[in-house]
Amino acid sequence: MNWNSIRTKLIVFMLLATIVPIVTTMVVTYSYTSKSMKDRALEDTQNLLYQGQRNVTAVLDELSRASLNVYSDAELYRQLQTGLADFQTDSRVFAALSYMKSAVPDVHQVYLYASLGQRATIVTNVAGAKRANDTAAFPDLDTYVGTGESTSLQPTHMSHTYGFASLQPQQPSERVFTLHRRIERVPSNEKLGYVSIDVKLALLTDIVSQLYDRKEEDLYVVDNNGFVVFADDEQLLGKPLKKAWYNGAWAQEDASGGHFEQNGALFVYERVQSKAAHWTLVKRIPTSYLIREANNAAAINLLLLALSLAVIVTATVIVSLRITAPVKQLVRYMNQVEAGNLNVPIQPTGNDEIGLVVVRFRSMMDTINNLILREYKLELANKTNQLRALQAQINPHFLNNTIQIIGTLALELGVPRIYALLSALARMMRYSMDNEASMITLRDELAHLKAYVELQKERYENRFTFHVDVDEELLDAEMPKMILQPVIENYFKHGMDKAADNGELALKAALREGGLLEITVENNGSMISPERLAALQKELVSVRYADKTQDYEGQAAGGSSREAEGPIEGVYSSLQLAQAGAEPKIGLLNVLARLRMVYGDDARLNIQNRESGGVRIMLVLGMAALKGGKTDEGVDRR
Image (cartoon, rainbow, N blue to C red; front, side, top):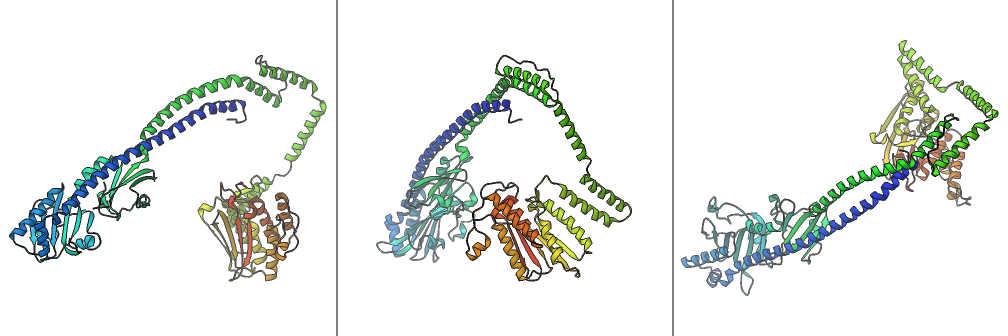
């Protein structure tokens, strides 16, 4: 599709003029409908949870009042104060515990422990009453009501026998939550015993199951210590609730209820207003479930949009074709003229403005045909002769093909080493002759570098080793062409000990913070003298600050500043400084100057001696080295 075409522009404009308002209306409608549904669902859920917490509060208050029967029953309370036990007191204890058991539905069992006399009594659904003398209180009692508050609710757990082993297997274990109350001698705080009422979880389940949709929603009942009293997942019962959203819901301890959104869901919570327990009802509603009706409406709207789009596109194309067909015909006439057919038959296309243009074009072509001069034909012939002369020049590809022929002959004559060297040379030539791409990948640069090192190995009879350590994901990083060879070449020119046979040359690449690509080249050759190293580092800094308002010496010595240069002049100053140096500096200075032209201030080139001998050269390429990367100024410098 030609984006410069009037037809294309007309089609795009008409489509945008119709589609954008429709899509905008759909988006606004969807957003408004979704918000309305969320608000309505939130209000309904808050009312439902409020009623649910009222029902739970009523059950817990009734359970607490039932446990207070140990104080209201005078005979039972006197027995706990005196510790006396006989048949009549045992019957009274059984009657009191039976009343507690029947006061609240779904009570599993009631346990009473008298500290005086160390007597324990339990009333169950199946085994009736069981008694034990000279026995210790159940250990969990001290954990929940041993000190502090006299009443505590133990979160959901599997019921136990309170030390009455004979209850099994007549009394099967069930999931229960338990109210523990410490019995005290009034008005003192002397402990007379404990009473514990186990309530089946089914009682709580019957209440909260009416508060949510099990298929789509989740509901949790959590105590003030973060333990789960109720949840659909039985593995969570009685354990701390470890959810990412839990702490956020209880940021305000005094709040009676509230809501928040997190992880694609709406959370609504309501606190149970009971003195017996500090529970919280939490309902999780997936956002997708809340706005399901809006999603259905959006799907219908999308279907209608697709049908409307088909009609709009068809009508737009037909109208555009009828309007632009004469323009297309005129373009075809022009293409034929451009191809050299100056006698193309031009037919009028109508009486409108475009038809008038076609008539004027036909008149113009008649005039041009009459004004073609002989000198123009002679100039054309002259250009043709020049082109033939250029084609007669030696093509560099001829040399590359000749090298390939010689390499093939070497292979046929059984000299594979010569073929390998010629192949390496041919790869270098192809790499050098490719003048179209100024930016290449690190993979291509390393391939060229390996071919160069292969030739140097033959030259120096394998007196050195070459190691490359580059992560696979960095091989597609982009960089300027012919950057690494001058760095490696310095080793062979100035650092390599020609008499030694243990030379080492290593190249590493790593990704630094900020998306900068760092390339390090190390060798074990000769070290650079301190004076020469200082001079070289000074030249490198001068290249780096060539486009700043002060040169390097001015910054170092506090000297006078020179006039500010623009970015283009600064780059040329960098190249002039680089070209003014002498070997081995010129190669490194040129490398730094080219890097600065591409990456600006992000480019770095550092050189230093290694403690173990040899030289380390480190290049830092800017953020544009990564494909698709941008500089910190947001400009793509590739």
